Structure formats: structure tokens, C-alpha cells
Length: 518
Image (tube, rainbow, N blue to C red):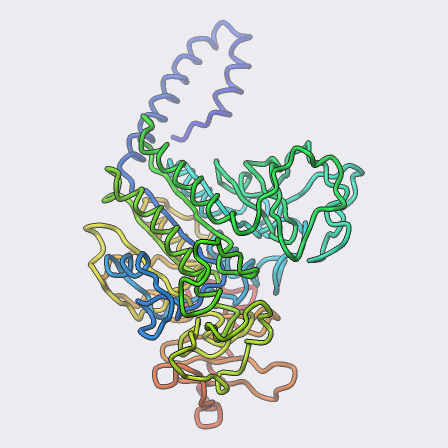
């Protein structure tokens, strides 16, 4: 029997008016506190979870994924050597908002109200009212939850005039946030979706940084500003090249507090830095540290900060009872970087894969994969995905099993003994056996999507891509033989393309059940 705090409170109010209710109240209180104690005892045996989500980091940035990477990533490479690396892991969409939605809900984003693209400034939550989220699930399982960094899944901002915030639905406006009421809390943000502790922004172009539900700071950004806002004297201004340091410091402080706390409930830490997404706000001490240009320097700085967090864990008595997950929300927006390449203007460097200079002085963030962020190609949607759990996951394993970012929810649910209802996280598959290195074909297909809504289907070795508005037919690639998607086989295998097209339409229909995909 589940007894909530709310039910106890209601019963107390009713029973206080009745003499006969007094004895029933005592029994109810005993049951309630016994239930809480049992839940706490159960939770204390569960593993802690640290989930690190990089922003626009490419499949080929890590040395463990790309022998030719020019970026030193010793901490992430060490993590890979101590756990399992998935080589066919996908972020369902090649831009941040929808991929984060898939992670947080276990659901493909095309099932939400936002069918393509990213949320613009001040748009409402992409997560439906009452929809179960990853942090909420863990919270209900007894976890203390905390998130630091980037949300970008929407929130409702208070205004002085009751109208929509100035700049609503845009990414840049001169009067950005002019009518924001800084004295009132936001609603439907990270805290209302399951994070007990939150520090970070919802959307970088809004600039605002929240602690809990309160606006406490603003990110100093070279593209966006809050110049039009009045009454912001108490707001801390955070230089963009200091933001990563601050998030790391706060994450370490949270871990240290949990390690010292008498409360032995497990924790969930979500570390979601704004790195290496442009602007390339590298700290002064990391500029020039790599041969991969400013972009590579920023990735190297990210790796070092992740190392600081992992070192904090390593020095605690919780190191063996913590699951560590690393992923990226989509591919890099740069196809090549280097000392001789100016990444201040990324559009100059988004060149076609065939035009790449394969010299040793160039770094390819997405490795051999075609395309970049925003695209339907593998360079946009395939991600590095690493999991470590001491004594549970074998060391240095590489798995080629299909995995999607939306599988994190069902997988962690299984590992913490949380039974997901049938109508929740419908596109999430329990990959816990694959996490543990026990190879299983849990997932047959993965739907992928570009930022403009073009869709594709990965099934086994094959990938089908829907035709865009300028094409008469789709495309088909054998990724086992052609990882760079250079040889379109739709004419040679037309029937297979038609079958995959039909299956894609079935998955994206409103009548779809994930049991069809098993």
C-alpha cells in the first residue's frame, strides 16, 4: 500500500475534528512512517547515477572512438577502458532540444507538440503535464536528484505585464526579456519535472540562469544580451568562459555533500554543460592546448572538468556503487578543425565530406561519419555512449548493438527496480543486459531525424532516409560496408527500401506500439 504525505495531511485535518478518528490517525501515521522507512531502506541499496551529457560533441572527438583524434581526452578514454562503449548509439535528432526530450521522457520527440527543430526563447515546456520524466522516475524510486547546466526543454517565465516575455519564439531580439519579472519563480522548468536541485539555464539565448525555480544570474554571451531588462541589479553576470568551471564546482559540491550526509539515499547527478557548443568559450588556461584549434581546446577542457567530477567520486566510498554514463546530444557542428582553421565563423568550416583535407593537421570531430549537427547523416545523429559500473560492467568492452538515447529511461528503470507503466516512455527499451556486457539484440530499429524534420530508419546494418522536398525517392545505405554513407543503394535494393519506408511510417504513426518492434 502506498501512502503519500498528501494523504496523511488530508486525513489529519479530517481526523482532528473527530474523537473516533484520533485512533485511526495513529494507525495511519504508523503505517506511513513504516512505509517511508521501508522505502528508504530499499533505496539505500540502489546504485548512484551520474549522467554526463555533452553539447554538440562529435563521435570522433574521443580518442577511444577515433584513433586519429587530435584532442587529448584522457579522462573519457579512461572511462571507456573501465566500462562499455556503444558504437551504434544514436541521439534520435541531430539538435539539442528533441534529443534531450528523448532522454528525459523515453519518447521520440515527434510524438510531442514540437515536431522538429529546437525550442526558441521562452517557449513552454515540451514535456506534457503529468508526463513521467527520468529524474521524476528516479525521485519516486528514492533518489535525491540534481541537475547542473543546460535544460532547453521549456519553462514558463513570469512577466510584469502578464504578456509573453519579450523575444518569445525568437532566438535573438533587442528587447530580450524586457518584461520578465525577476522577483517571481519560473514554472514548469527542471524542478517541476523532477530535479530537487537545479542550477543552470533553460535556453542559452534567453541568458537567464535559474537556481531551483528562481532567476539568480544571467549568462554573458557574445550573441545574446539582457540589456533591455530593468531591475536586474541583483543578478549575477557569468562570463561564458567561466560557466563550465562554475557548473563543475557546483556538481562537485553536490557530490561532496551527498558523501558526507547521514541520509544514505542514492543520488542522481545530471551534468549537462554547454560545451563544446558555440560560442567556443574556452578558459584562458586551455587556449592553445591542442592541435585541433579552439574547438579542440574546449573539448579538452570539458574532458578535464569531467575528470575532476570523476576524481571526486573516486575518492569516496561510493565509487563502486555508482553508474556513470557519458553521451552527447548530437554530433558536432564542425566537420573539420585545426590550428590553421578559424572556427570563429563555423559556417566556413561546414564543408562536404568529400572536400575534407585528410592531412594530419586536421581534426574531424565526427570522425569518418558524413555530415554534422542538424543533418540526417550519421555525423549528426550517431553519438559516443559510454557506461561504467565497477564490478558490474566488464572492462574495455565495445558493443555494436543498436542503442538510442531514449533507452536510458527504461534501462535505468530496470536497474533501480522501477516498473514503468505500459503507456510511459513508449520508445524506451530496457538495455540493462547490454549495459552489463551480456550481448542481446534488444532493439531492432532506431528512428533518426534532422533538425528540419527529415526522418530516417536504422535497422540492422541498413539505413533508410526519407526523400526531402527536392528528391523523388529515398536513400539506402549499408552502414556495415559504408559507414560514411557515400554509396546510395536504393536502386539496387529498392524492395528493402520500400519495406523500411513502410516500417518507418508504422513507427511514426499514432497507433504504434513498441511491442511491434520487439
